[in-house]
Amino acid sequence: MRVALINPKFRLPIDTRTSPHLALAYLGAVSERRGDEVRVYDADVEEQPLTDFLREFRPHLVGITTNTPQVKQAWRTAAVIKQELDIPVVLGGPHVSVVSEELDFESLRQPPVDLVVRGEGEGPWIEISEIVDSYLRDQPEFTVTGLMSPAQDLFRELKSISYKTSDGQLHRNVDGPVIADLDSLPWPAYHLFKMDRYTNLQPATDAIPGERSFSIMTSRGCPYRCTFCSQSIMPIKWRARSPENVIAEWRHLVEDLGALEIGVLDDSANIRRNRLIQLSDDLIANKLNHVPWIFVNGIRANLADLELLTKLKQAGLKRTAFGVETGDEEMIVKIDKHVDHDTIRQAFKNAKAAGIETIGFFIIGLPGDTRETMQKTIRFAIELDPMIANFSMMTPYPGTIVYEQVKRNGRFLVTDWEDYVFFDQKARYEMGDLTAGLMEEMYRNAYRQFYWRPKYVLRAMGRKDFWLKFGRNARLAWRTVMPRKEKTELRRAMEESVQ
Ligand code: B12
Ligand code: SF4
Image 1 (cartoon, rainbow, N blue to C red):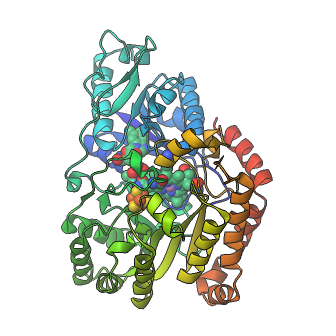
Image 2: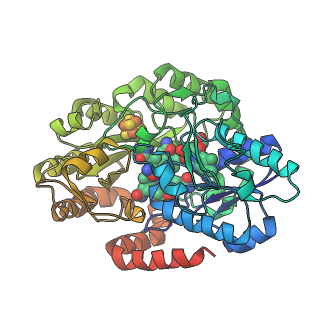
Image 3: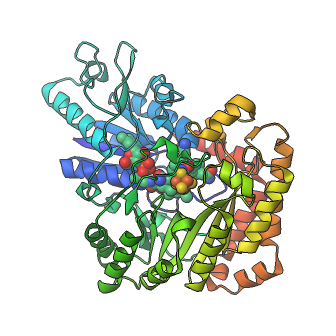
């Protein structure tokens, strides 16, 4: 069976084509293992129009990944597919997994969407493929109306999916179990991607060619439930791959694919300290520690002692992020971060003492934030002085606790899913004294106060990669200064490009 996997186009004044989409890389790998012929169409880097791709490949089944700001583009993409081919279209990813807001049904109400996979996708995706494949084999004339016929109801037993029968009825099946043994998954299928079209993990800081930059996930899930984080949509159960399994993939990335950098994408990589010590020992013993790697997402500051970080540095860790979020002592309790500021201070000290570069994630405009608390966040960022401070405008994603808080006590300023992005200088909600004007002012202050410090500028200019990336970063800074016009043009271009 021919299977296409699509990442819908998404353009903002940030680089989203940093690296291949890991979800599609995993789904592609399990489809190939099933024996399917797979193609990935990543609209972020693709030059061939979608219609040409569909006419050339003629897939029997299409899967589209979608987060919240991508979902409308996913529907547009699905509509183009249905104009060309009578084949089932499946959506998956964080947005459609939010059952509390019925966002699975929201997508199924779109005429071209037939099925939705909620949560972890590999299992249900293969089960859907099996059903479509055997239906194809049995039917001389395949139609989606036949496949989705309520009389047969072929998908009624599949867990973790929602679907629409051809009489228009929507169905939501029960959740299935998460993948207990992550070692059972094949490695992400990077050969399905046009690797030379990606930038790299952190294009603002590192000058590494995209085709030599890879991601890896050594664990899935997060046992915490911070109030602002969309991770709450996904399975709570934290699971890790075995060190042997991780090392085998790592070796493949370094030795077979020539990786020059590796991004560890785990949500909470350091939940089990000893696992990381073991992984580091194995990287060193296997002589894989010469390729620098980065914890792209925050690791937990409360589990980042000096001994662990020193060991990770020896194993090749170049840079790590920490989710700091706020500089106010009460706010950090309110957002259920389960860490205090002294612990965060110590984690940054430990990382610096171990010789690891740091990234701090901060949020401007949490519910309950005031001018004073947001200023404390900026001051705390300056005190911690990471190499990169990443300030996000609080964006209440559906399914999160903050979303519920805003629904109850505040007012959303966005009604369009395409605006659910947090590097856009625009406030996404208001609540009590926390007005849009105040949030936007403090967001600008944060970037200005943190980055326009002589100490910071001098340090940045001392880095070779700063000069190698100067042109790109100057362009990006310019776009960020003028977001509205830029964004309108980008959106128009994006809508026109799906054909
Ligand atoms: C890496 C990453 C990025 C990279 C993306 C690079 C790339 N091309 O992949 C960058 C830095 C560019 C990025 C940007 C953004 N990101 Co981001 N990102 C992530 C991160 C950390 C990892 C994604 C990943 O690879 N996961 C691993 C895979 C295996 O898991 P997965 O994607 O969930 O896929 C599984 C299931 O969802 C499902 N599935 C997914 N797609 C499909 C499709 C089908 C057909 C099926 C059947 C199943 C299925 O099966 C998969 C395998 O089990 C996640 C957090 C996370 N843990 O997932 C956030 C996350 C996806 N990002 C998020 C957000 C908000 C954004 C931005 C909107 C931020 C912004 N700037 O405003 C942008 C959007 C950019 C874009 N192009 O869409 C949110 C999404 C929340 C939401 N409701 O949509 C997340 C969940 C972070 C969070 N906890 O809040 N991001
Ligand atoms: S912010 Fe980090 S620790 Fe908190 S729920 Fe999200 S992934 Fe987990």
